Length: 79
Image (cartoon, one colour):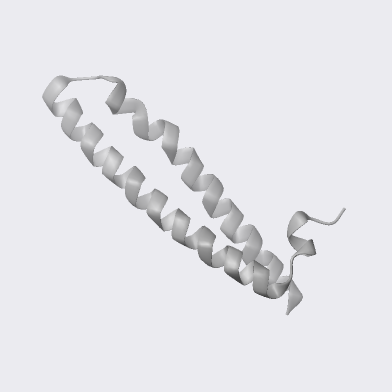
């Protein structure tokens, strides 16, 4: 069965790859900042909701990286 990415043109895939990379970088920065702030919160107030907040957002970042790899793989298969 053909993947959804195989229906896109090369230009569309390149644009999608660029936007996915940008979003992944932004998410990585946000997750790192959340980890830093949660560590400060942990030291100041002890364990709270903010301590575990990065754990909820980190998987989203990894899903985004997986999508970037799939797009790169599809572009490489077309060459």
